[in-house]
Image 1 (spheres, helix red, strand yellow):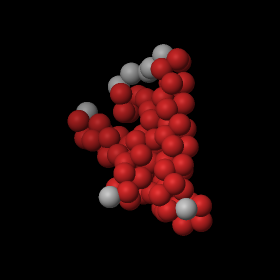
Image 2 (cartoon, helix red, strand yellow):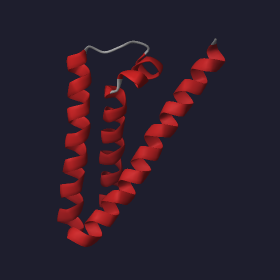
Image 3 (cartoon, helix red, strand yellow):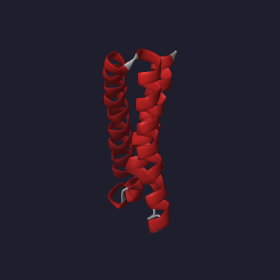
Image 4 (cartoon, helix red, strand yellow):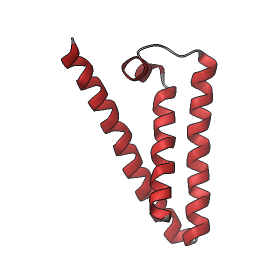
Length: 95
């Protein structure tokens, strides 16, 4: 169960980081966010990554927890990139 929680924290963190970048706001949100909102999303993303690191190390110890967390980060980043790719691809077919 902790693995699923770590994956969700990683996926949400990378999603917040992705939504905080002006380059990805157009395809994802169909508009540009104000600078303050983008900054808050980036802060939330980095906070989530730090929280997930602490959670993994608390659950599994320093050495194994870091490995588990990096695996969850990899899966979360892949999920975010795939979401972005499918979102851009679906917008191309609508036009």
